[in-house]
Length: 314
Image (cartoon, rainbow, N blue to C red):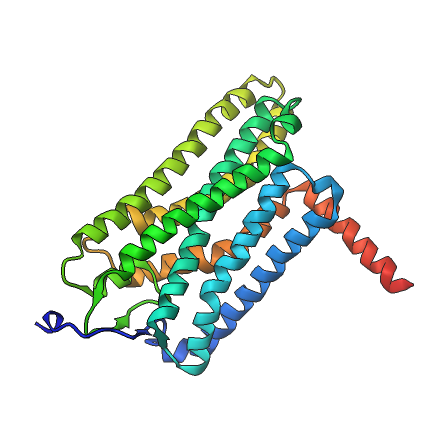
């Protein structure tokens, strides 16, 4: 009955991890460590790609944008978690909640599209290595990246408009650590069916279309690898895709769990754990995934380290 009495909501209360007071300090230290390492790894990757001429290739151009997204991605969410854990201040204004939702959705959507573009880049590189530089020239690369941002921005405007055009009644407690679709839909009152259909349909379409692009891109890659006679050659060629496949599996796996599965009978506690994976853990892992087994990145890192050591010795 309470939901029939409409009261305009001007702020929300983020419950987050406040239900675990004994874990407040350990969680704060954990999230702060993750955040600092994430920023260091992703900003470091961007700087490394900028300063090393050998990394001025389409693959690393897209990787620099992935690192930028991951740094922004976690910066939208983690400071809010840290502030809540440090001060017990769980109140977030309606406008800040909408802004957080908007920027989070932009980052998530852009990363979804960008991973598909990176799969296409790998397809061109492996199928036509001699024409790769010409086919993926700077103009094409910038065009693809701008297309990725525009598509994500359009989708974000649609999702944000649909979500925040809903009516939120007396209950303003978000059982989550940031403003996301599942907990906000649970708070909405009145008829939310049409908005929910649009939001879920858009989320599913974005994930499925980009997953399809990745699949179509990898089919000719697999064919090209199988045509290579030597096992060493096959392993070397596949290694150029291994990092991207790992990043895709982690990102799309968590997004699929969150947004494609049915909303009936799902637990927000499960959603919290999965959300921590793709908002905090994956941005931390991506620089490691793309650097640990990447000879070019490791060589560039050694060069930069030597330059710093030479500069300090002078």
